[in-house]
Length: 247
Ligand code: NI
Ligand code: MN
Image (cartoon, rainbow, N blue to C red; front, side):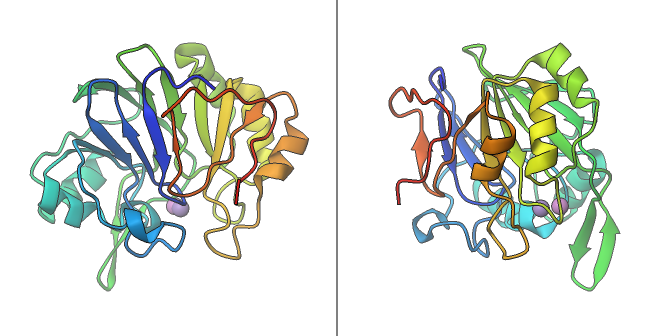
């Protein structure tokens, strides 16, 4: 796996921190405080320049409002979600919609489709949050990664492949609320990435899908299983087949 100068840390579930070659910090789907998979040492966000939110479910934006108040990052989301965050105190909102691309910080972000629901639990109320999405991120080195958000497999992943050809994809595999390993293997056929980072599994007992199952179903693809809190890209990582947890 060649990360071309980025450092990528999994904070558990669907939450990732990426340090760009230009020194910016990007966080995708900020959920740390109540995220049982997030290591204690990562529960306090120290720096963030760009926040990308895939949809309004609590396990994806649980800490977005607090982080925006504390660090004032550029926060990207679909308009209904972005405006809700703005109403709650986010100052630096950069809304967009599916198919669009914008430059935020030193990355190019394209919002792509996801097939999932998107209500926001706001106190006792369930607020309309627009639609769920995924993101293709292009870094200054040309590296492209795709964070699928929460989704089932859908055939338009073939369009994401044709238009953007992301080398690294983060796919949910836990099943129940998203696709499981069987659909994720099908997604690999459509996306043809170099490497897959499985996410959204094992956080709760109901999220039963595992990287080893995906590896069995998609044997030709490098499945990179990382531990929550582990950072990739601090040195060149060359792996073949499945990279198992070290602990
Ligand atoms: Ni969700
Ligand atoms: Mn989720």
